Image (cartoon, rainbow, N blue to C red; front, side, top):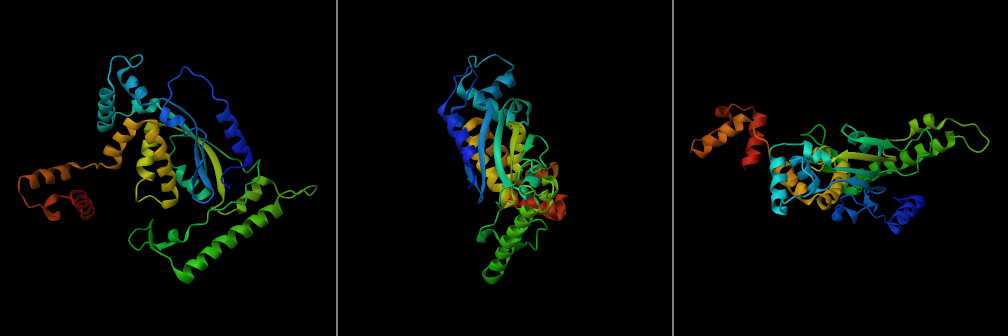
Amino acid sequence: MPLTPEQQAEIDALRASPQPTLRTIAPGLEQHLYTAYDVLDHGFIRVIDYMGDDNAICQAARVSYGKGTKQVSQNEGLIRYLMRHWHSTPFEMCEIKLHVKLPVFVARQWIRHRTANVNEYSARYSILDREFYIPEPDQLAAQSTANAQGRGDVLEGAEAARVLEILKSDSARAYDHYEEMLAQDDQKGLARELARMNLPANVYTQWYWKVDLHNLFHFLRLRADSHAQYEIRVYAEAICKLVADWVPFAYSAFEDYRMGGVTLSSKAIECLRRMLQGEEVTQETSGMSKGEWREFEGVIG
């Protein structure tokens, strides 16, 4: 169960008592406020609060008051210009706060992005729920032979069943021991801050994560990429859907220039010029390493 009864009651109460405001709102994101969207088997993402919209980005870039006389098409063009030329500070004028429930091992990957404000559920004060991430069978993959940090072929048959059984039984056993070690009724037991250390990395945690749009785009560029680990990628993809409704012009520019675009080195650009002039260019004559040339070929098809 992703949401606790208490969390659902809080959401229901907030939705039942909307407040008037003079601040700018983003209608596309308003429809998502507080709603929990399921991710993985027990996780979720929900928007708690936000600040700014596409107009706020343009306002900051122009350092002006209000919308002025600028047309919507001019705002979209400005945002695309800012994205194209890596002018990041106007995007920092927008912020979003998310409530995320995720496995600990995903959280440890996520926290490497040190450009957000984070407050995590504390297992020093509270008892973690008996909830563990158990992969779907199609996500049980062997180690890649070509990529030291990636997956290879999906496990099948008896091997897949064996791995699933190990994951489930080890998780259950660790939590049983966690409960046994905790203080129970009048028994002293082990302190919560110590008992938690025996829990596996697939146990679920929760946090509030607040980030500005510029740094959020950097997170999404890396984590929504097809090469990112599946378990963090599905969270990034869920966030992408929210951002597309929040700042549609900025997200469209992000998709075009960051997710769908590439950065070429000066050597790669020179090779393209030579090719357009009809010259045959090879890796040996390009000045690139084999790895660079392979990536360049992947870009030009």
